[in-house]
Length: 125
Image (cartoon, rainbow, N blue to C red; front, side):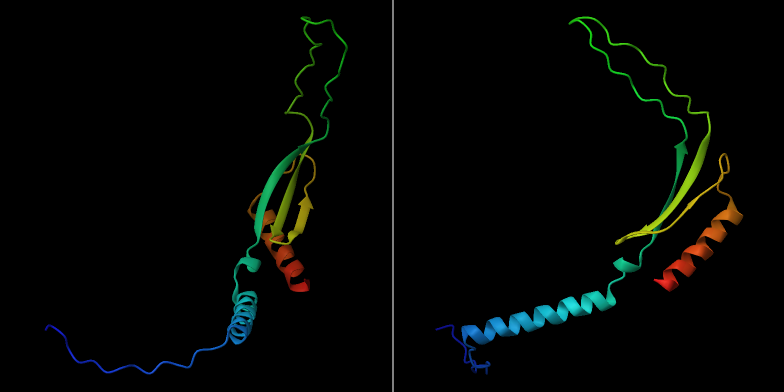
C-alpha cells in the first residue's frame, strides 16, 4: 500500500479572530518599542562643507521681440570673496554648524575642534 503509521501532533487551540488581532497589535507595539530603543539610525551624524559666495549677481529680465536674444549677463566670479559653511546633521535635522572666516579653509585642527564642539552639542541634546 505504501503508507506508514504516524502519530498526530498536539497543536494549540484555535484563537478567535478578536484575540488574534489583539495579539498582533501587542506584538507590533513591542517590536516598534524595541526598534526605537535599539536602532542605530538615530545615532548617525553626517557632516559636509560648502563654499558660500558673498556676491551673486541676479540675472536681469527684459522684454524683447520674438526671435531676439535676451540681454547677456557676465558669469559671476567664483574666485571672489567666499566663506566656508561646515554643517553637521542627523535624521532630525541640523545638529551643529560653523561659519568660517572669509577665505579660511578646513584643516585638521579646525576639524578636530568641530568634532569636540559637535560632541558637546550632542551631549547637551
